[in-house]
Image (cartoon, helix red, strand yellow):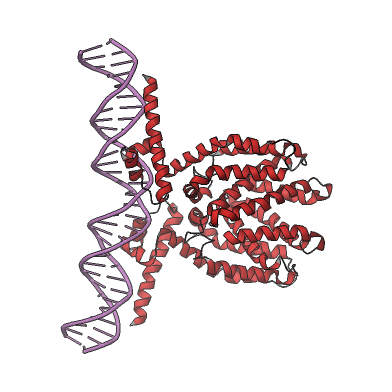
Length: 224
Length: 224
DNA sequence: AGTCTGGGCTGAACATGTTCAACACTAAAG
DNA sequence: CTTTAGTGTTGAACATGTTCAGCCCAGACT
């Protein structure tokens, strides 16, 4: 039957995935070999490559799974009714991500390696991750939809906020303070600052500086 | 004689270095093997490891050499007499770096791989690169010494400017526009913006927002 | 039932960064 | 001149990510 075959295959894929994540958590990404992962999953080395392109792509699979699971939380954070101030929504949005990633923080650090190179398939800026990035930006657009932002800035705000929250996540990955306390602090202060800046951008007085900001954003978005 | 021995050793090191850089430029970092480098230098594979810890560390050696050679240029850019506005000094300072790196831009991209992880020996944020970072910050401190910046912000300004120029360099590394035209544009606009912000920071009116900025800077500097 | 087919899986082979025990050679000491 | 010591050099061996030619077998087809 077609079904049992697919089911069996999916079961093997899952066994490899779970074995890999467990090993990564126990020994770290670098220290875990593909042979060890395969052995732990009870398959030959090659089987891991039948299901995953590379060692990094297993981490990527976790990233995608975690990302899918957090969608509900992200939606709730982005649109919690008009009562919640923007600052709180933004902070909450980023917190949802950190909470979802937390159990495998050390594992995700592996992605940091290639994170800076947009050509890499596992870069948050790369083409392969575009769907997730765009969905993220759609949430963020919803988050600021009711803010009455100026016409020239508005189209860029989701991308800017996306970069903001990605920056926080990266900071969190390298933050070695106890319980990543520093990141929480940064999130609290920076979310307030970003929200404030967005409010200020609505004042007619700030138009000249807003023009420069938009210009900078457009240059950066043209490359990244 | 002691001298000839050292000289011969240094000659071998240099041969390996030149062979590696030439190969990197021709075929790229990833595509060049240590065996190819050694062969090109006319030595056995192991010899390369006698002189360099790893493949990346050869790139690091180039980085350090280029950095040493650009010191004069950096000093001139940082302190060109009171006539040159801060904006121009900052842009020139960063340009000096880009010009020095330019012939091996593709080679330096290899450092981007580990650039995000401060634990890596080849990270611009790591302990191994601290001397260069601090010398850089000394130039930048000199650059703004005559600007009369507010007491609370002043101690952080060199570090902020260092991050600024490092950001431009990284942007330049991933910038695929023709001749990295985008980076030039970004440098022009952003240097003006940074200089403007520093001037604005002197206005008593901006004290509250400056407090927030300082708070953010202190959190980030505590981790990075 | 026998045969065929294609996805799932195997494990040896490969490429390459890196290590290391052994060797070579130079220069100082005896 | 011989011995000694230590730097410089070798190349095989190792570890590990990745590839690949082929085997296995469930299920479709005759």
